[in-house]
Image (cartoon, rainbow, N blue to C red; front, side):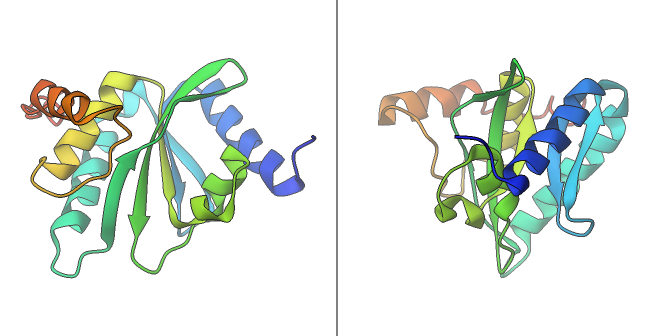
Length: 158
């Protein structure tokens, strides 16, 4: 089945970011489009993630939940998604990108081209003290992941 116009638009935006060597692609709720950071934008990436972490700590915070989703490919590039549920901020872009049900419209996509960077970012954002729904195959898998990424101080120092 051919993608809808909205689905194709989301795929095209992410493809353009990947063609420009994006390492991190995210949905910008202000401009209503995908934006991205390249490897040379590392300082800006770190600042963006610090600001996102601040939204997880604010009383009655904007960030309700952070999780990961299974990897998928866009034009041959493997994408490792981190998805974030914001308070009162639906985001149909992820639904269009994944070509799935409206349940995905609750989630804002943050797309990584490197699984380790995604996992380190999730660990940094959640501190593993918050309840988080992680798509792990078992409790043991989740515990192993939390131990592996518990020391995330190097995420913001890279």
